[in-house]
Amino acid sequence: MASTVEFPFNDDEALPTIPIILSYADSSISANALLDTGSTVNVLPYDIGLQLGAIWDTKPSLISLCMFINSMT
View (cartoon, rainbow, N blue to C red):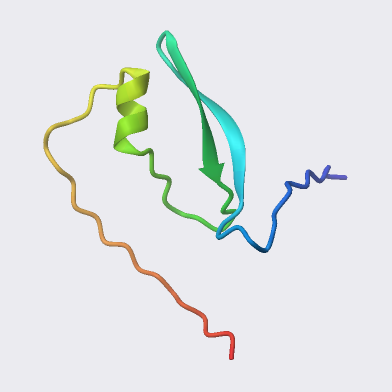
């Protein structure tokens, strides 16, 4: 049987987040991550990557993102 973990979420908040610790090489930082169990793309903000000491490719990559918006009427 799979265990269930519940994270607090208030209706006042726009999106649910969870606290995480990111580590790369000898660096680590605390951040809040968007809790999205349906995501197919993961994005690391540029400034967080820089804080961790990541080396970014200077050549931009273009990707297409499609979004389905479901009306709740």
